[in-house]
Length: 130
Image 1 (cartoon, helix red, strand yellow):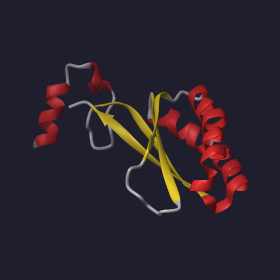
Image 2 (image 1 turned 180 degrees about the vertical axis):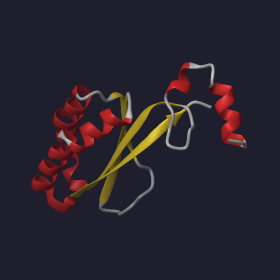
Image 3 (image 1 turned 120 degrees about the vertical axis):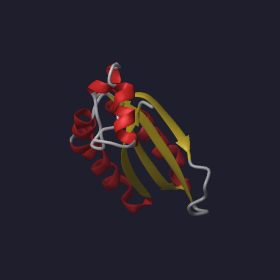
């Protein structure tokens, strides 16, 4: 291989980060897992309680670490708010196990409770070491 990716590979070849590689061969340290929840403003109290008492404790029990909840500053809809929940999983398998297992069950529970008044969107990202 040649080019910038090959050069980065050589730079990291002696480090612990070289043991984990992304699909594009970037050295990765862990998976950043993000679920953004957009909800109708009147649900702030009950949704925040569900997030704090149900989703976060179960995600932490499944291996999510260093979690942060942030309100999106961009206004999507004047009658809605969006919270992004981010945290780390040790690897893609752990993130997928959570997302496809208990995480999916909790999102089904959320949908049954609130319908389309709360909409989640999940993104997996590789934390790369540069």
